[in-house]
Image 1 (cartoon, rainbow, N blue to C red):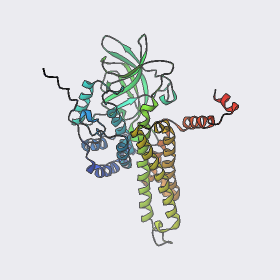
Image 2 (image 1 turned 60 degrees about the vertical axis):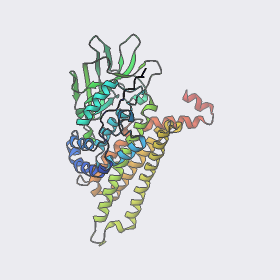
Image 3 (image 1 turned 90 degrees about the vertical axis):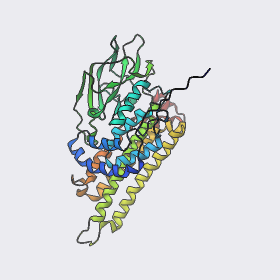
Image 4 (image 1 turned 45 degrees about the vertical axis):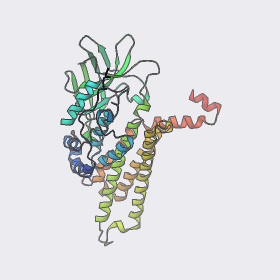
Length: 403
């Protein structure tokens, strides 16, 4: 009697071409100024990543992918962030979707659905992003449940609700909105929604200081029907239900790798200006002065600190070290502070030229300021860190205030 052979999950997947990355980054950097000015979806940049296989770099081995982990993704996203951070953020959300499709992961969608997405990704950019933030809920990291509802019907799940900060909204192939079911015992879950489904409205509200080409508009679902099997990560709602911060820890860290890329791009712009600027009174480039060399050192110091933190925590997450997951919020705040500081130092040193729209430093400053607005925000991080650190030495007044 012959035993049945296990069915292979592998499917053709576009492999990442590392040798093409420098050329891709240069192409993104050339496209970025116009995309920022127009604040429109960066289709050409996304196509560059797709053609080089970077949009599917995190597809797991079980599906025939390169299985980039958090450390490889961090290095990749720093480079893409140097070229265009808006493209990098859209790509990151797609990469994290693929990373969650490992068999057995509670966030994974059905195998038949995922194979369809992989088949589409082989032909053209097939982007997926999870939508969680809502006008009433705010950031899920602060607790609470979505107002978006999934009603059970004979035809499928019927979704109604509004999501905000939907990165890449107009260029996605699929949405993954987070919603609560209307069952007798409610569940919270994600639902795979084709972007061309009837009842979806994209509200063009994104008119941001930085990261303008992400088109992070609001999305409204009005009785959008999806099949019953398009549900993922369902869990019964309890008083303790909230976003799983351990599951999102890699994304929290990887977002900051994008802004390290922005800081490196800003540093390069500062260096170019310093070598090219030759005041008449000086007669040589300002890069030769002690003042500018000291400023360059301060910029480098801040970026090195950010990169060291990123590498340390990426290694910790990859190894499954508990302290890395526990302290990821602190790492996020420290990295964002360092990269913002590095770009601010460069702009301050150049004065008016640094704020000119003709100088790429102005755009890099606007983009890097967005590093701090991603979840978790500094106020919640500092409160949690302070409460924990104060509790290490008991004092009745502190304990009473914490209660």
